[in-house]
Image (cartoon, rainbow, N blue to C red; front, side, top):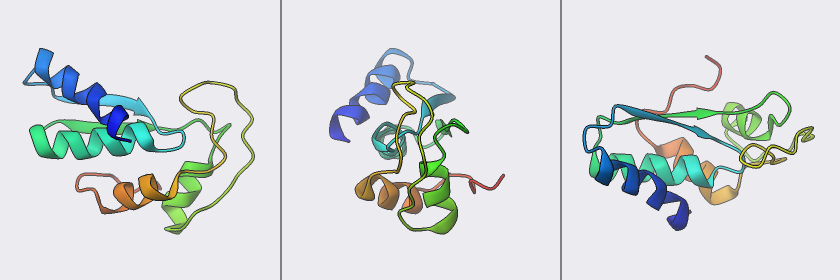
Length: 103
């Protein structure tokens, strides 16, 4: 997750007024690292996590508030995960500015 956090850090170094980023959720490390980094460096930056319907494990985990596993029917690198990582789920659940996944 720490390595994934550097992605948005570097983006904010290049574009300090970055309005938002769209990141794949997958196992959750990139979106969790992005949320943490944006909160620390520029709270105005919106982080939007996207999840494929072909790999809904992360969305189900968010909806249920607990680790959930779902069949992964994609090989898309950033989206292919049967479930979200436990640490990422905790960060995601606590991060300010994360929309309810049901919307």
